[in-house]
Length: 177
Ligand SMILES: [Fe+2]
Image (cartoon, rainbow, N blue to C red; front, side):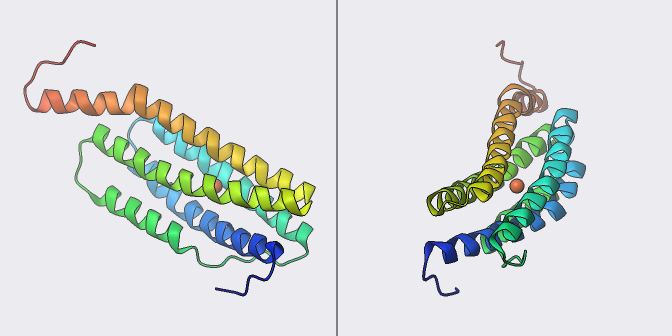
C-alpha cells in the first residue's frame, strides 16, 4: 500500500485500482459472451464490453487531467471476483441455470465497480476536479444501468427459464403463474 498522505493520493490510488479492474474485465467479458446462451444476455455482455472500452478511455482522460500516467495497480478484489466467474463458466449446468449464474457473477462485478466509482466520484467532487468528476460520473451511470438491466433480465427471463427447466427435468408439471 502506498503512502496516502492526502485525499489526492487516495483518489490516484483508487483510480489505479479501477483502471486495472477494467482491464481485467475487458479480458473476461468475451468468455462471458461465449458462455451465455440467452440472446438477450449475450447482447447485454457484448454491449457492456463496448461500454467498458469507453470507460477505460474516460479513465485515461481522467489520469491525463490529473497530470499522472495512466497506470493500473493490481486489483485483487476484481481478480477474485473474475476467478469466481471463471469457475462458474467451467461448471456443468443447464443452459438457463448457467445464464442465471453468469448474471450473478456479473452483478457482483458491477457492484464492486459501482462502489469504486461512487468513491472516486465523491473524492473528485470534494477536491474540485470537475472534469474528472464528470468523466467518472459517466462511468458510474453506465455501471448502474448495466446492473439494472441484468436485474431485469434475471427477474423476467433467465431465472424463470431456469425454474421451468428444473421442473421439466424432474417431471413436475409447471406451476401456473
Ligand atoms: Fe466498468
